[in-house]
Image (cartoon, rainbow, N blue to C red; front, side, top):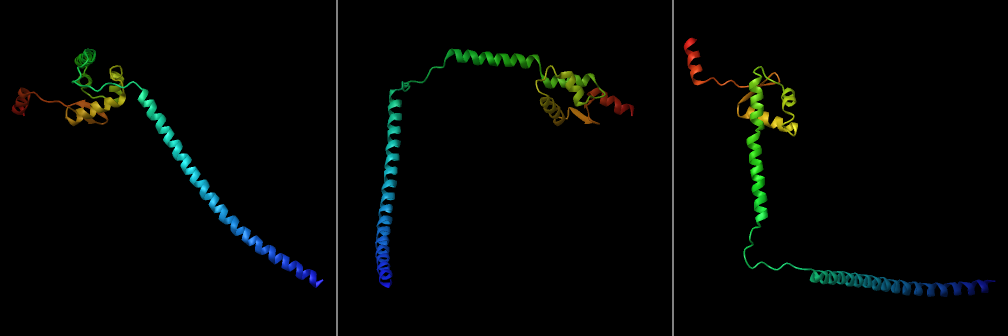
Length: 171
């Protein structure tokens, strides 16, 4: 039996050698195959990109293009009329209603002062958004036309020139 075992061992060694050579060849061909596959993929993508660009250029060439202006463009009269109409409307609206004056007049009618909520309840029809009321109140406070005391806004009393003189004489 030892002869059979020796023969089998020799054949295993021989097959191992062939397997190693085949594995090396396979790895070499596999690397070569992967490199060829990668090159093919790169060139296919480049071809597709170039074909897309060519189609885009062909589509742009068929579009109707505007001629380049040779002279200064003339303004369209409709546009000017529209702009003038808008400006006229804005001027009319500003003349009709000034929100700051409305708040000022409201505070003038309530000398004891009004809270912001009270003012809002009075002017909610004229004002589109409530935050704008607070902008108006801040503007009036910054100008020192109104004061805020105990959460009420009051119009600041500015004595007339004659009244100031009379008060200083009386005191």
